[in-house]
Amino acid sequence: MKLWSTAKIRESKGVCKLPCLTAYDYTCARLADAAGIPLLLVGDSLGMSVLGYPSTLPVTLDMMLHHTAAVARAARDALVVADMPFLSYQISQPEAFRNAGRFLQEAGADAVKIEGGAFRASLVATLTENGIPVLGHIGLTPQSVNVLGGYRVQGRTREAADQLVADARALAAAGAFAVVLECVPPDVAAAVTGACPVPVIGIGAGPECDGQVLVMNDLLGLSDGPPPRFVRRYAKLDAVLGEAFRAYADDVRDGAFPSPEHCYATLD
Ligand code: KIV
Image (cartoon, rainbow, N blue to C red; front, side, top):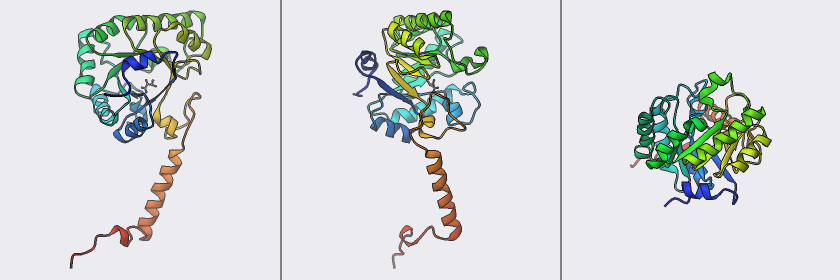
């Protein structure tokens, strides 16, 4: 049995903070799992972080299944949540249910994440009632970037903040085991967190949430260009990797690699 289940995540509310991360591949997921990260989100941010797309919209179900399976093979203790990509859950509930089920049945995920507030409550209920745990996602929902008019801070008016509180409550009432809250002012996040009976996991939402999630590439210093304001870089792997690649190239050009210890002996 894994250390982390949806029940344990839910019961963490008010008990301990949840440091969550995105993960897209076996190696990084193995290291994050071993470091004690309770929840690994295979985010559709992989479109930008790993695949070089300008947004999450080109990410397909097949891409998500492929990366989720790699992360699931690595996660001994962490809960693995697969992000349902654009068009995989919006068209109809039967289609959403079939696609969500594939993440658990074929890719080894423990749960799925879907974007949207109270208007998704009925889908969240259908999935959870049929054995598929759901992580909600409100605030800045990147799959709606074209409707929102850009990657903008959400919940800045009283009305919008009240709507976020209502959304979080509705998702929890429908069975979501936790809710991601993206890019809102800290006081709004505090109100949502206080009103929501399940953990609220913030990203760009200040310190009052029940947990935090960061895009792994941002945390490692591997993002393409400056990361958003809410990111703290815990490493500068871009410099470390660049230096390793340059040193290797220099050694090959100079004939310094391979050296005798890297060569096989003949038998006679
Ligand atoms: O796709 C993703 O990585 C996400 C997180 C930023 C919450 O949705």
